[in-house]
Length: 167
Image (cartoon, rainbow, N blue to C red; front, side, top):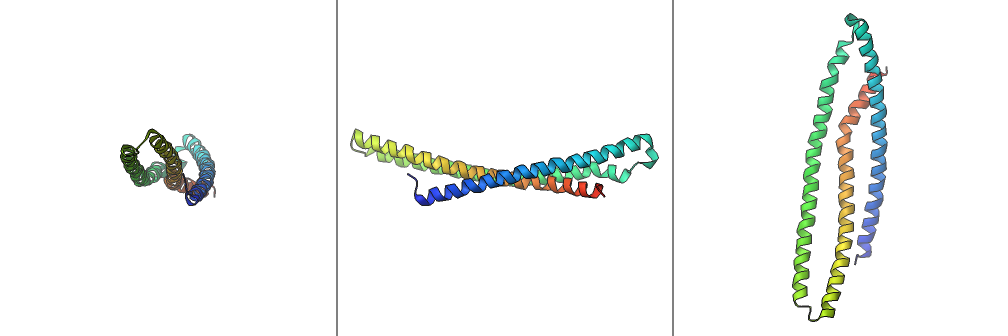
């Protein structure tokens, strides 16, 4: 059975994760809008360049690939860091669940009666469900934070381009 303190922490974690998911969705919308403006502007530049190659904005065209490589390389490095954090958290959950299973097996061996064993199994199942819920919330929160961090360099680049090209 969960303690009131753990239930309160889970409720706060759930609320903050939902808030971050909403913020991430908003940032995704910002990214789509910025990218749309950049794509539109560059398509106009490309069309003009086809009509008059001598007047093409070569400086702008030379930025396109390096800026994407830079933004996505930074995002990939962030993803690697967050993947390690997520893997560490999952392996911690697994270690704790193995320890809990060992404790249950030891307690089962000395439970003394079928009724005691049934009560132990019921308590073990209830405890596991509480841990699984808490662990799921914590992992979901970590994933939302990682999404926010990974998206940041791509969004930053797209918005900077949209501002620069919108002048």
